Amino acid sequence: DELRLRALYLFEHCETIFDKFGSKDGLLRAYEALGNVYLALENGELALFYYSKEVALSKEMGMKVRLKRATLGISNAYEVLGNFEKSLVYYRSYIVQNDSMMVEETSHELNVLAAEYESEQKENKNELLESHNELLVNEVSLNKLKVGRNRILLAFTSLGILSAIIIIVFVRKHNRVVERQNKERGAMLREIHHRVKNNLQIVNSLLRFQSYEITDKKIV
Image 1 (cartoon, one colour):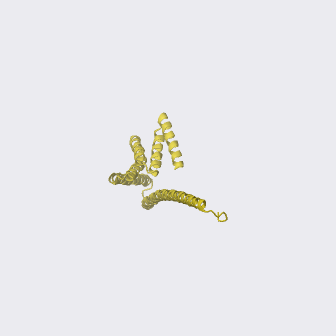
Image 2 (cartoon, one colour):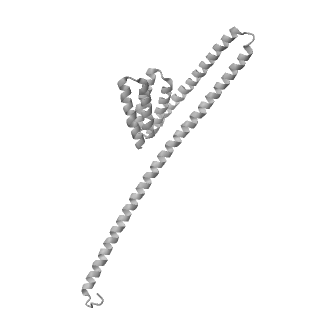
Image 3 (cartoon, rainbow, N blue to C red):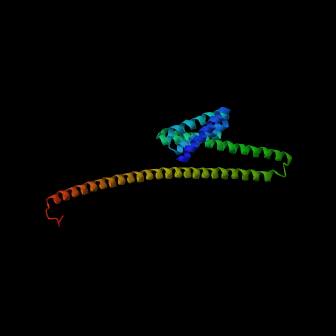
């Protein structure tokens, strides 16, 4: 927690500097970093605040990748706040954006390949037509493999982050339970010590009273 607080201080300081010098790209990075730290600290309200600022600035700058990540951050922030309905809405929006970007990337790559194919076709219509068709099929297959690999990596990354958050929460709860138990044991020991001390004082007083009634000096 101390390291996270230091990180918050640095990121907030960076936000101020970027805002002062009008660095929008720097502000986007600061908003995302602050949202991530507050999310790790389970402060859903502040995480939502910075992710929302990142969404607004990403739309203004046309930064689709940042917008997609900020949308997922908002979904996670609403989940921390217990608003699962809004969390699901933003998660669906994230999925739509992610799929749309993948389609655009694939379409762009296919367009590039098609342009290359047309250029080579004009130069070598008869000789290179068959080989270029094979290249196009291989490139499309490679793109599909890349998309599948990226999805798997994203799933494992999300699982790792979720597991780390669960472990952190579990350790913190366990430490709190141990601390509370130690305090209770300490209180019990102090109470027992106090009672034993009082009982010994009572016994000492009784023995002293009895000694006043004994006349035999040998016994005393």
